[in-house]
Image (cartoon, rainbow, N blue to C red; front, top):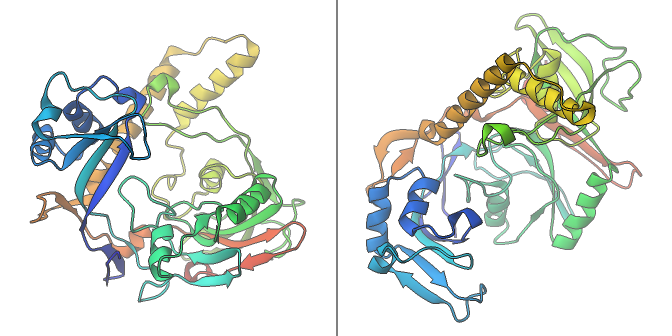
Amino acid sequence: MTKYLIQGGLRKVVPEYDIISTFVKDRWRDRSVLEVLSTELKNRDEAYYHSQILAEKIKVRRGKNRKGANLVTYSGVSLLEPVFLLQNSDILERTIHRHEPPVHVGYNADGRIDIIHEDDEICVINKPSGIPCHPTANYYHNTITEILRAQSNGQMLYLCHRLDKLTSGILIMAKSSEAAAKVTKMIKERSVQKEYLARVRGNFPNTSTNSHDNIQEGGDIVVDLPTYVLRTNRSFENCMDEFKPAKTIFRRLSYRSDDDTSMVFCKPLTGRTHQIRLHLQMLGYPIVNDPVYGDRERKCDNLYKWKTLLEKGKENGHPLIDSSLIDAARLEYESIRGRKDVKRELLMNNEVCQECEGNLFYDPDPNELVLWLHALRYYATDESWRFETETPKWAKD
């Protein structure tokens, strides 16, 4: 059972040994184990992985049956021999001393996550800011799915949709994959309406009403601009996925002159990655404490222009793109990728684990893990169900 420590407004995972099994990826084929580990997992150097191989904490299971039967295990010096190269059906197994960054403790001092609805099929929670929804990158136990599993004595819950790590509010989870598929299908078919609150910089343009009940498109600010996903693990030429249509309705609820911020009601009609955050930045009213899109000028402006011309080129016979724009876009991309590469390093402090000699994660200020964007309400268009949270403290004037 995972052991958590609640301290200073943070949830920490007590380090433990864990076995990570990974199917060999295509790009790993015909490469040595040492080369793959030192180039793919850059948080440790080659000397460390060399010592781990000799200590038999890194193994390769090889055979035709991926389920575990008839697999031959290779470890130790044999993995360092020049003739031993990874194959497509191999399983790379690592025994690691797992460390995770702290996350926000949430709404309750004891770290318990609030459940606002539960029945035989689903469980709806009020997700706190600063916690990833599911295991990814540096996080495993410090994720919503694993925290809830520990909270419910081992019950497995399935995500029906996702919220960004920093976003709080309504998160619908299911007690079976079948129930999850049912809700996911409703969301994809846009049979579910989603409504959010955000606190933004500046005096957001006023609209016809200050109520956020039964929001309608008439009289509100509508942003109908495509969004994109930037892939920093790809080359510059292929770093941006194709634009996807995205539409969000906004309405100002209130304005505070003392700190020049507005409370804005947001209704996304599509479900793109970072859609609300991107659209608010495009309007020039970014979320106050957004660490990525908090500037009033887009950080990816040249990339966006470059990608827009590429998309138009597909329709209009590939028009010429000014070389200066290409150079500016490339510089933006390299800058963003550089920040991404050091992101894990920034999470580390100068202390070292006495057990595994790995760098430890630092304890952030809990306020750094909060974004003033909250999923207030989700409801079915046929009115068969409706879930709503309390208004967060930062949204109250």
